[in-house]
Image 1 (cartoon, rainbow, N blue to C red):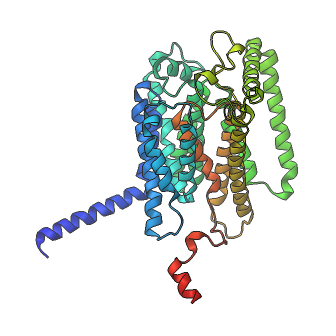
Image 2 (cartoon, helix red, strand yellow):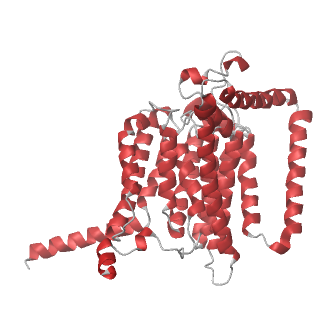
Image 3 (cartoon, rainbow, N blue to C red):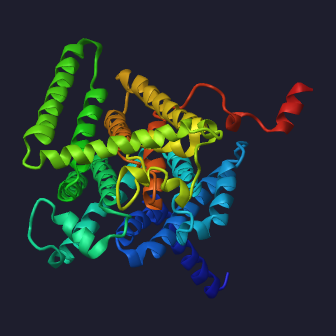
Length: 436
């Protein structure tokens, strides 16, 4: 072999080793914090969504390549999703279908990507997502002059004055809640002290941003979801009394906060008007199912006309969304939409139940199964809170992808199922030879 060939082979081997190391740390997931940060500014929306499509394509291709290398006989369903993603790229990147059917395509793709991840892969993904609060916090501080004064709504003031890229402060708060709990999940799964310090710092930065949005949900939901995840992960049959006590404490705290908010706060009348308006909006959207014209089955559909159907509730602008995901889906997509929502809830619940049964058998369990189950419960409870209090999936493609991706933590397998799968069956040729 000539010297030139040896040099070439050495370069190729070094490149392969580098790519192998980068793939081991899932370098492609570093796109996510960049996407979320860019999407925080109007001028960064289109580049951010382009990067989001690239990330989803890479993840789907990874799954296809893994199946090919393993000679799997499972149908390549990821290829169909990749094809659908490509033909809808224009609608996604240019935001031409911001409240249309591509919402659910992005949720589905995120769910499929997340459902194939192992526990180790989830730990790495959480680590990359934990970068997001730090990057967003740096940008908020960089634009601090946009806020008039330092206050409890500092992040909201800066966002509305200088950022305003995620479709409103509530959408921005939703993103912050998701990445804050992702950083907390990384802390729970961390294997070294530097990782724990990094994760805890990112989680605290994320929660500080949540508090600064002046959103009650962003302030209350993350710690409450964490408490519920901790209780679920450590529940025993002999700890029922403790669970009842904890639930009673939570209910008491909720009643005290609610009494202050609606009765004794300085702006209690404004709070009552605002929240009653949200309830009326939800009731209006849900009632659209019962206005005839097959709307009970199909809903009212998409578009400006549908968004204005509850405009009579407020002067100067309609309630374009229901402030409740179930009411929104019911009014927009009818009973078929509600059934689709229930299917997703059942799949997630069955996944969490399977994880709960796995961690209940403590003997021989690796040390990271319990904290991952806690993280999975917390993330899905947070999604549930947002589902009940907001129309979480609307008007933000980044949020849509993260909804599916993080909800899929419920499907992470701790143990290999005993049942024989299609992928484990011998190829047809072997079946024929065995039968003869």
